[in-house]
Image (cartoon, rainbow, N blue to C red):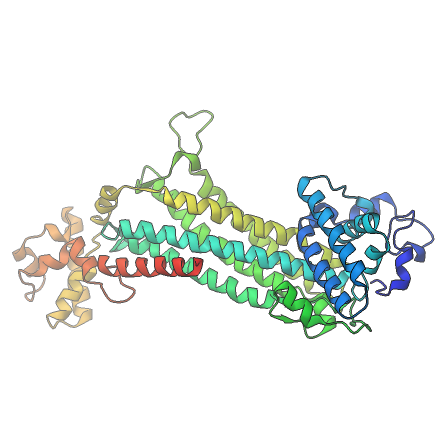
Amino acid sequence: MENTTPSSAHNQFDNKSQAWSARFSEPVSDLVKRYTASVGFDQRMAAFDIQGSLAHAEMLSSIGIISEGDLADIRRGMAAILEEIEAGRFAWSLDLEDVHLNIEKRLVELIGDAGKRLHTGRSRNDQVATDIRLWLRHEIDVSSGLLRALRARLAELALAHADTILPGFTHLQVAQPVTFGHHLLAYAEMFGRDAERLADCRRRVNRLPLGAAALAGTSYPIDRERVARALGFDEVCRNSLDAVSDRDFAIEFCAAAALIMMHVSRLSEELVLWMSPRVGFIDLADRFCTGSSIMPQKKNPDVPELARGKTGRVNGHLVALLTLMKGQPLAYNKDNQEDKEGLFDTADTIRDTLTIFVDMIGGVRVKAAAMRSAALQGYATATDLADYLVKKGVPFRDAHETVALAVRSCEERGCDLADLGLEELRGFHGAIGADVFEVLTLEGSVAARKHIGGTAPERVRIEAQRILDESLEAAR
């Protein structure tokens, strides 16, 4: 893509303001400039570009390619540039195409020839690959912290409602009673797997491409391991062709993000349903809801609805990035400029969504009476009656048939199994005794499931505390 030797440096910023302008006989048209420029969105990597350039400069100085005086000038110039960027005074130029050339042009203006020497032994190809990895590593760390915080909020709410009973559903039909705390911890498990995926993805993000140059490496005696240590990378990319063209790490992050948003969307769907007056299990704080322009009684759960919608946005970015990469030959191609906007938006969406959900879950108001009332509908303890008969020696299939007949009878009479008297129950099977009513209560049903993974209040407390302890340990 570009010459990595100092001999081309004096041509880099002539009156046409292009790094390759001496090669061409006419300037790039304004339309092409706008079409090919990335500075409008990749300037967000500026701090990471400077970080990578400083590590590169220190390495060049250590092997004698640039002088200590040049290194000092580069450090001074980069500090001034970073200050300008953070203060909003930096003049970004479309003519300079991307964040890298904008910073380099300003560095040359500030410190002269030392700035021109900085690009020795590298290309924008390995430079941008390094910047993206530095930026994405930071975003993964932020999102991982937010996932820990969200899991902690879910665990806190689960502890508070370890005894609160609501119906568990399959096929959206009442199945068996569970505790609300247990239900919340199911999402804590999902987000825990998401955190594991991000940690695993981070390992592959954290490999240094710098030193691969344009595609074939460089003839200078560079020390890539030194740069890797300076930037906190675990290792270096082992093949120069792959180093500049690989975007697997970005795809992997987008895939992990899509799974996070899928889990968020499932939780959002439940929050929306639970908040409906027809269900009435919870209420969300007003700051996460809006009203209607025409119906004054409305309180709409806009945040979970929008999060549910943004899931499609993140899924789309994953598909776009996969499609972007599927037809590219080695090594770097201009196509890869299209990797950033979707990746940036994915990270932004994940960060904002998780931040809001941490706050929102902490403000959920639970309507325990409504949950318990709903659990009393739909014969939620039917399985408990079948299990009771099995423990009395009845084969499970026979017990299943017996309870099904009892449920049908209750449906015809408009009552629950727990409403039947002992003699009525014995009419369905003689093995039923007075102790049957212990298993027909909601509390008895959930309390009996105290094994690992069960819904019993004592198990919910153990699991919720485990998650809180893990979150505290990880935050240290």
